[in-house]
Length: 176
Image (tube, rainbow, N blue to C red; front, top):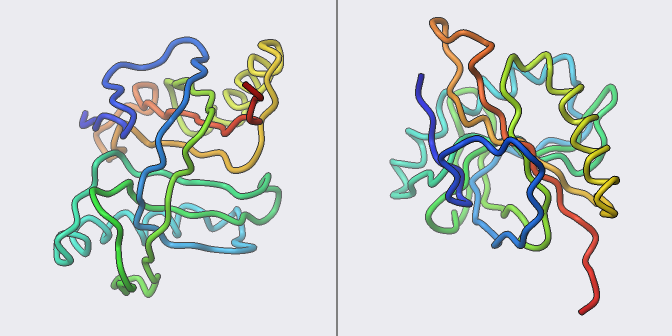
């Protein structure tokens, strides 16, 4: 099972909600608006399968695991970015063999809440619900965007119960 530390330096799963200040991190992403949720697997496969190699060709290196960032709550469609945090800003565009176009973006800096989910991707909705509740109980307010790091690389030989996905949400700024 292959896992990559997050750009926040985590190597171990976060068992409890952590609130902290995160730095802005450059990313290389495929952006989509109103993308059908039922087709999300094809977007991720079409991006993640080719992106690391395309970035290497541009002299850019991933500095963390693949992620999906959401600009609004997905229902039947999503406004999202999927890609990798990278060691420097991507200038211009890269077209992937899948036809998707990669551009530069950022994971926003600021106050964030973070936690890890262990298990299959089918359990993410429940994990987000529990995470959201924990954030509210801490007296915090989530704001957009929010994102997931796919810390454990899935594969045909990986037990879905061992997958680690880190959940991250930007929080409302605080005065003082």
